[in-house]
Length: 301
Figure 1: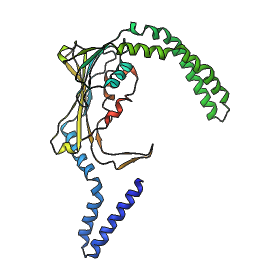
Figure 2 (figure 1 turned 90 degrees about the horizontal axis):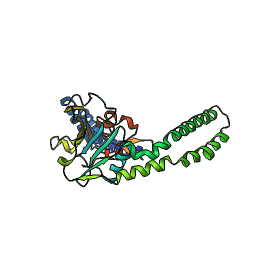
Figure 3 (figure 1 turned 180 degrees about the vertical axis):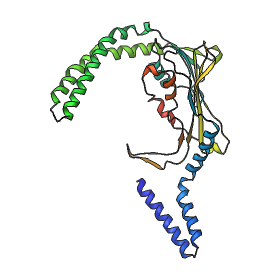
Figure 4 (figure 1 turned 120 degrees about the vertical axis):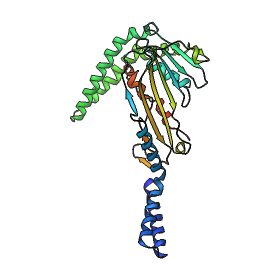
């Protein structure tokens, strides 16, 4: 489909040049018209690029990490872009980061303007922690068997018997341990008991503050480009330890991604997924990808 659109437009350009030629337009004029027509579909992209180059020149460096933290203990996460975390987003954050060891307190601003304060200790996960050693041992063994089966298949051997053994014997054994079920139950209990505050001033002190907010440009620049910044602050030492600035273009979807057959458009400066930055600085222990929050990279004018 995208190739058809390109071909139709090129035929349109050829038609205009032919008309110009027939009307007696001189060569310099035809060259100018040709260049203008070929660049026309990319005009917004070019404007976006210029705005971003100017932004980058004035904001070097765009990203800086003074230090990362292995055990943040308590974090206040303020999202002023969308703004706030909806119920699903808060549950995702609690599930992936609030482990009661590296992180015991997590405060999130909600999409309703309230602040949700969640707490957990290792005792909250006592049931799943009791199961974890056997769960991890069996899961590691299954991974080794899967690698063995794939290696046999890659070398041209028959691995169907081994795959059958894995699926019929080991997968049920892993599920029967009930680790995932128990962990989910514990997380849901933690999520069900937040302390809800109406004002930021009421929230207990935390070791770190993560803040995402929009960076304002001139009115005409904001017609083409969105800019925001995530900043991580150490409240104990009273210093910023990391920041990352990002620009996203609003340009038409003229690019094409063959994987999945989806269009991808616009230009960007900085991280595509702004939320992955806090993983690098504060939440590296979790070893997760912000898959849920990835959908928030799409911004509307």
